[in-house]
Length: 229
Image (cartoon, rainbow, N blue to C red; front, side, top):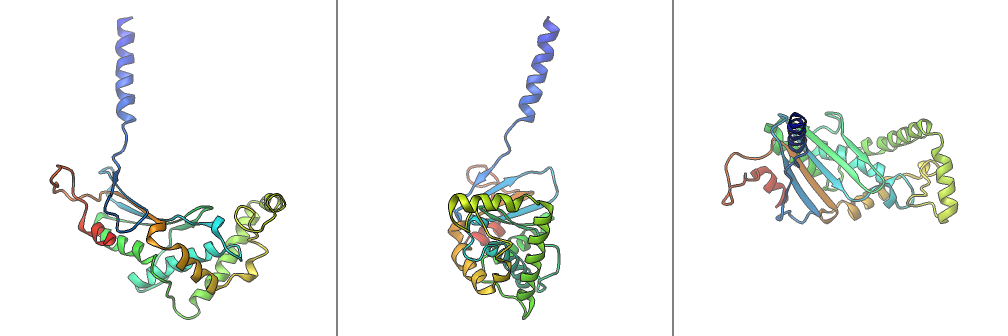
């Protein structure tokens, strides 16, 4: 019986250690952002910077699909600004129903560049002539591919449109609206939604400097403070 309790105690100790919460530092000086967090860990020799715009497909104006098109324009414009090439690399950005997430990852030595790429997403999109227009065709192909992979999606939209009496929000009209996608509406969507107060930032990985502040906690890197200024 005693050995059983001993084994149980070890298991509880191990489970408690495994379930220990990851440290999350909430930044109080966040440069006008809705929220900003640092999640330090030494488990991986990398840094991930997530810029989360708190608007997505449910915020589409007319036409549906504008948030998706804006995601493309903002991501490639950021690369064109920082890397000087709009298609220098694969873009990791996704439009969800209520948010749009941009992720930039790399070694800790690239932290400043990753933060600059994330910050540039909020700047008005600037792309070479013809490039922005070509993204409309790409968004159309991605949308139709998603429809083929989820053939019941149209039925759900039809039901919601009938229930809510609208073609916006959850009852989007994305397929029928594809011919109406345009850059002017996407640029206006960016102006309305891609503002610091509607954006959260999460920086995770090996991101903390070794020096300690006056409270004995690791200092936030200067590169992050510069982004939030």
